[in-house]
Length: 281
Image 1 (tube, one colour):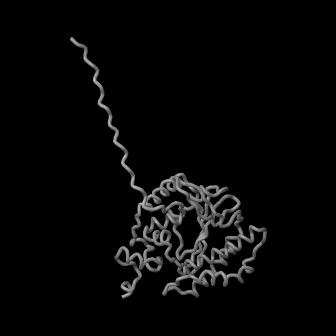
Image 2 (cartoon, one colour):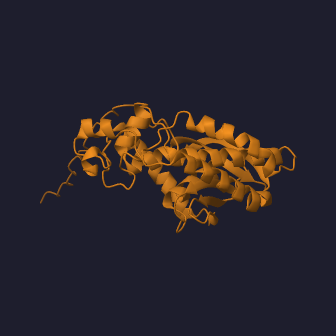
Image 3 (spheres, helix red, strand yellow):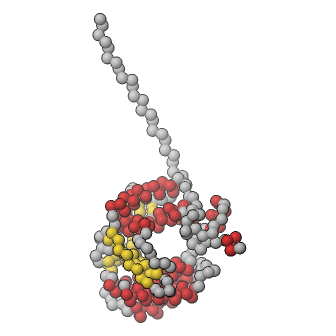
């Protein structure tokens, strides 16, 4: 009886890797937390603002916030230079700061410009009197950049104090109920890119209610926050390059009051953006 011959295994066929479609563009070469926030809230808004560069003038609320921010920055810069700034000494520059910020603004028909200016002045004074004196700045408007998840990322840190804590200044019409996911993403980003950052952060929110308030909220960047930055930056860049720019008409910020791209959005995608004449009828 002849010995049985060994059975040769069938050759394994390894399928060739499917060719990957080339990106449609080079968008997202350098990202920032604000770009990611805008894209996640409304891809179409990101496209009009960052890809096409359509005009996006600030509304009255943004002007108010910018002026408060500029006045606080002037106070901290004087302190950083070794001085002992007095809020009274900054009062003379408030009108100029307001006029400069308001020059290119698009105030809404329902916005009271004089009220917004008074609120900016009162919020500035409250912050400089009650909160700013206790802060020891180490750096202001600090540009940071680096790589997260294989994506180049950059941004500006409002204020870094001498303990390595990142502090952001914001204005709002309502009292915050907690630290937002967008802010957690932002400070997780800056905590990785900013030399000397400790992983601690604080957001100081100046609330323009009838009784003006300054709400301070402490935050510590967690491993989960860092994981989200590593995941989202490359995914957002991929979506940008694939040409996925969907409008989000369900967003709380979708409306003519908050978005300067309503006409372009309606023209391209149809439908209706809140705040048009039809809504007033």
